[in-house]
Amino acid sequence: MRLILRETLLAFRRAPLLSALSVTTIAFSLFVFGLFGLVAVNIGRAIGSVAERVEVVAYLKRGTPLETIALASADIEAFPEVDRVTHVSEEQALARARRDLTEFQDIFQDLETNPLPASLDVRLKPPFRDAAHVAEVAQRLQAFQFVDDVRYGRDWIEKLDRLRNIAGAVGTVVGAAFALVAIIIIGTTIRMAVLQRSREIAIMRLVGATDRFIRMPFLLEGLVKGVLGGLLAVGLSAGAWALINAVLLRSTFFTPAQAALGVVAGGVIGLLGSALSVGRHLRKA
Image (cartoon, one colour):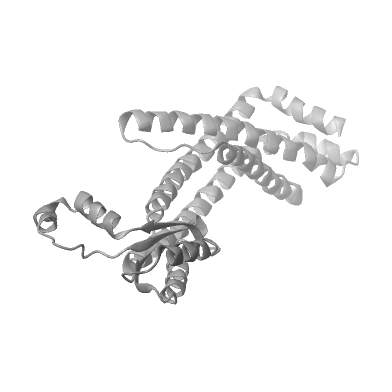
């Protein structure tokens, strides 16, 4: 193992310019991938913020006792999909309508009785904010005898589901394409290093070195270059994010876990690119 580590360090010392070029190439390849990742993260969070407004509203029959509502709220909060339940009284519903629907102030002032019913506003947990789970919760709410009607904006939630699916599919396809391009570029860069040391590889084979022994320093070199490139790419992405925030619009950066995952991805891509390049050279040699 010490010999493999020494060979890896010697590779950096023998060709510092080529090593720097390799790291820079990897960094910019991952930087492009990181920019796409930033776009995907912000689109996902924007969709998530819209999904936070998903709720099921159960309108209650007039005269329903508060004790019945309290017991039912506790039962509903026990649903695995439900995050919280808020009881909105008739008076609160009217006050909310007067606050939000300012264009109907004249109508509200002429009211002799409150026409708005009390309701239970049911908010769902993030994993269950889709059309199927919302419809299931609405169906269960409708089974309560004191519930007069249930509304949840079915068409709007179905459109949100379609948008979420489209964003996920596009993100997967484009992300995979960027990753493939990064692997090809990194593999080509490492291939240059392999060709530079082709005479050394031939000599190692003549003295009895196995393909595994020859391959290991290159794999470790690819891993190190990938990690260094990943770190540099995260730094470049942070600079681009700061520039976007200052000039264009407010956006969100990667979480520490996502940034660390990007560095790990750089190492993995470097390892794969090195494995492909070295394997191809050893098969031809």
